[in-house]
Length: 547
Image 1 (cartoon, rainbow, N blue to C red):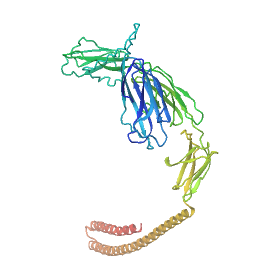
Image 2: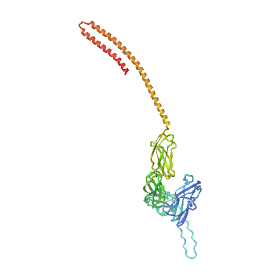
Image 3: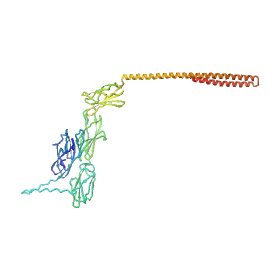
Image 4: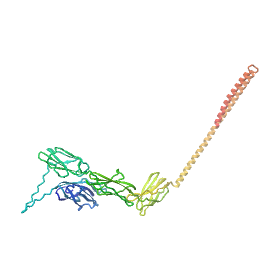
């Protein structure tokens, strides 16, 4: 601000210049919001004459009701570098006596670095004293008396410094209706006097309120209030100090959100408007879909919002109107984003060799992006973009090649504003190896199977020959054993039979002949049975071999 201080009379006008110091860097844009005491001052005009800015994103505007001034401007290359770049001149009209504060509440200074870096380091302010106008002396006739000199203002004495933990910024609006004020008691102070009213420079009087160092007020009504405080020491009462609190508990007026239906291929626009009778509108917050998403923050004079970056289909918007005290009023609306026309696939390679490239072509809206999707087994393989020409024709050629497999492909369109279409019809195609590769694989596989079978057959023949030879030797051995057993047992049987017959002959005619004969027959039968078992065993061994 320039100047940063001054003394002016009620009813008078004065001008404050807004300047920017680039801090040795080159800048190309700046914006800011200024708050002024609208009880003491009102803006009568803003001039851009002599401004370093030739482009304005926000024309310098003001609101005497809200006590705010806003601007946003820029300058083409090469930008500006300096310590006092003129932005605008603000003319104020002094309304009431008191000390008026003018300060920045927000701002940005952007470097000319291609990135729009905000290099803002500090924001200035100004304090201006508004004094009552001194009435000139009345003429009594005759010679005009000399004008009496103005009585100099009484110097300030022991003025308190007041702070508030509940309302720390005198230029900010708050919803809290309980205000606490604090101050430090200097040495020698014996009494304090304080009061709260809506006059900016009231005197709290010379009646002591004790020796307190803080005071709290509850249930304060909406509006601008001033806390007044002065000290008394052993000499006299001092100069009163003042602290302003601004309270607004009422939300902005209810409102509705309208939807301006867009032409095909354009985003819909939301429009809304409301007012606030207390602190004034601070901003609009626009949420699309969910309060968990990042809000689009709009200045209070921006009452339209064009949606973007949404999928086609139905959506919900919530607009939150916020006043300077943080009170909110919300409204919701449903709207729909219409998709653009989907592309059509007219030709494609449905069966290609792995050493060739897949292609497809089609038609769509003119001059739009065509997004090509290729998928294998529900897994995304390719997502590529081509451009349709002025007639709506487009062509896609895969550059990298695809492994042998079966694929699904389709296309979607997206215009330059970011609005998408639905998907085209899906097509399938096959990538297979070259014929000579498949024939070579067949030959190799056939030869492998043939060699394996040949080896198995040879192994079986050798095994059969080995088993036959082993069986022959085994059979020959068993045959010899059978022959030997038969020979030995028959010889033994012959001897037993001969012995038995001799025994019978010796007992012939005797008294026990019959009994001895029966015993001899039993022994003979037993021997024959044992020999039969031995012979049967050998025959059984031969049968086991032959099985």
